[in-house]
Amino acid sequence: MQPSSLSRQVELIIEILTLAEHEGEDLSLNDVLDFLLKRRGDLSDLIRQLLELYSEYPPRIIIALMRKDPSWRSAVYEASRIWINYKLIY
Amino acid sequence: MDEERKAYPRFLKPNFKPFDPIKIAKLTEEIVCRGDERKYTYFYATGVYAGISTGYCVGCCLRCFYCWSNISRDFPEWYGEFYSAASAMKSIHKHAKSARVTKARISGGEPTLCREHLVKLLEEFEKTDLRLFILETNGILFGYDKSYVDELRRFERVHVRVSLKAGDPEAFMSRTGAIKSAFEYPFKAIEHLLESNVSFHVAAMTDPRIMPREERRALIERLEKIDVVVAANLEEEVVDPYDMTLIRLEAYGINATEFFKQTSRAYY
Image (tube, rainbow over all chains, first blue to last red; front, side, top):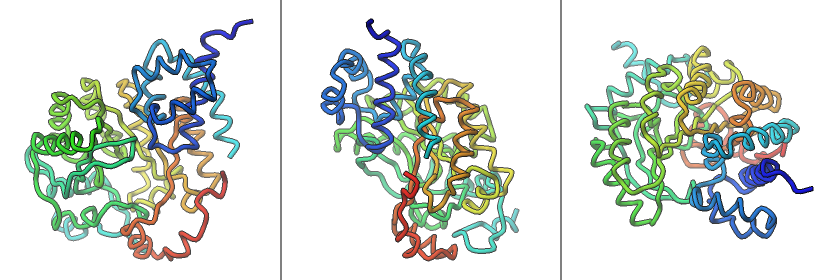
C-alpha cells in the first residue's frame, strides 16, 4: 500500500523538526540538503518542493511558513501533535 | 515621571524593585527614539539564521540577568547614534550585500521600541531585494497593544521570533525585573500573532541552569493549549558566556564561573 501524500509530508516535517532540535537554529535547508536526501531519498520530491521556496531559511522558520501554506498546513499540525510528545518526555 | 526617571533600572541586582515594563518602554523611548529615528550602536552581518545582516539597536524594556546584549541596554543615554529608518535600512542592506546574505533584522535591544521607526524600517525593507526580515522581540509591546501586531500584516516578508523568559509569573519577575502581571504580555503577543496570521515562532530560555524541568513542562503545555504547532516548533535557548552575561550574572549575585561549570543540557 502506497503511503498517502499527507503521511509523507508528515514524515518530512518530523525530519525537519528533528533537524531543528539537534542541529541548532543556524543552518539553512540548503546546508542540510545532502544529509536529508541521503537519509530520506524516498521523500526527495517533497524536499525539492521545499527547496524551491525556502532553501535559505533555518528549519523553524520553514515550519512557521509551512503552517500558513494551505498545501502543508494539515501535515504540519499532524506532525506537531506527534512531535509534542517527544518534547514533553524530556 | 521625574522620580521614575531617577529610578530607571540598570543592571538587575538582588532585592531589586520590580518595574512596569510598559512604563520602562516609554521612558526608554524618550531616550532612544526621535521621530522616525532610533539609536543604533553598529551594523554588521553574522552567521546566525544561516546568515543575516543586523542593526544593533539601543534600549530594552526588560532587564534579564542573563542577557548577552551590550551595555547600551542598561545605559541607553550614553551609547548609539540616531538613524532614520531609511539610513538604518541602507546600512543593513549594505552589509547584507557585502556578506552575500538575504535576511535582515534589528537586534541587541528590543526592536519593538520606537514603533514609528520600526514600521518605516519595514516599509524600507519592502523596497529592497532582501528575502526575509526576522523581528526578534520579548513580546511585551505586541502583547500590550494588538494594533501593533495588526500593522505587521501588510508586510509579506516579515517573520517574528517571540522570546519567552519564564513559565510562571514569579520566575518571570525574578529573571527580567518586571512586575508579575507583565508575564502575560508575551502570551498575548502569541495570540495576537496567530489572529493576525503573521509568520512567527516562539523561543524560550529553557536552559536547565535557569528554568527547572517542571516549569519547562508547564510552559510547553501552555503553548500547546494556544497552538500545537507553536509548541512543537519551540526553539529552546541556552545561556552563553558573553562578556555582558558574565557581568550581569555577577551583578545579580550569581557566581558566573560556577554557573557555567554546570552542563546546559542536563535534561537532554
